[in-house]
Figure (cartoon, rainbow, N blue to C red):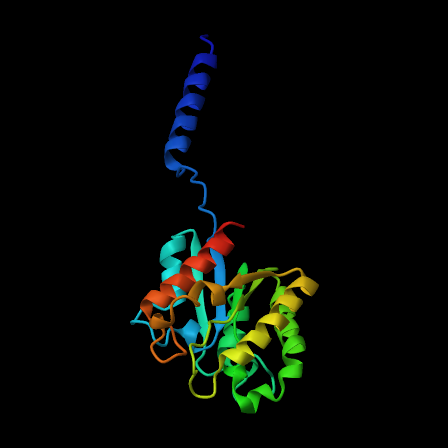
Length: 222
């Protein structure tokens, strides 16, 4: 009687080939994009810039597909909890946290310079620290950047003014030293370009492009 071993070997080889053909090829998954939450007021939202040309939109274009930029700006909002329209009470604040960002860029303070809000300026430091720590406590453990606000070309508008922005910058820089935060200097980037502000508050599309480039350089280098 002939040995069955050759037939068994051939059958096993054919079966393994069929299985290999039936199983889909293993494709390595693409890395998840880096999620960037842009937190701020109307300047972040895009007031003053052309449609779809807010600084977060232009930041997305600069960073490319490996990044996912979320715009969580809300017009007229303050960093101060006791301000007339606190960012703390906005759905966008909750949405920014649900976004589980890897990077957070905070640019608030412009509306805080108005006299009715500025009377609470002694609380600006602690409120800012609490906002930063709210994001730092997220499961995604994001790196948080804080921005020196846009300059306010004289004489300002709607009560928003450069003198109080300068005071905020001192507080922001102090907070950064205390908390080990990186500051993104939007103020210096835009200060030579008062012509880019449509109403002495909001940068136009070109101004938003400068903000986007300044932010991109800061976060992409890391």
